[in-house]
Length: 72
Image (cartoon, rainbow, N blue to C red; front, side, top):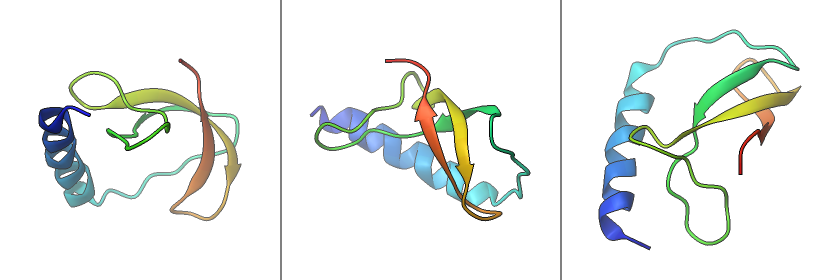
């Protein structure tokens, strides 16, 4: 793994976490999500914001959901 990419992701993660904006989402919606730079075989985000389009499969509570990436 490129350490620079991982450091870049940490900066994006700090920014996303600091926003603390309440979002309203529903099952079946498509959202761009910052999924990050992961270790191992997990799906990584793309581009400067480490984002991917995701379809919300199940709303778990008002803060979290289960989603599936729409791109490879």
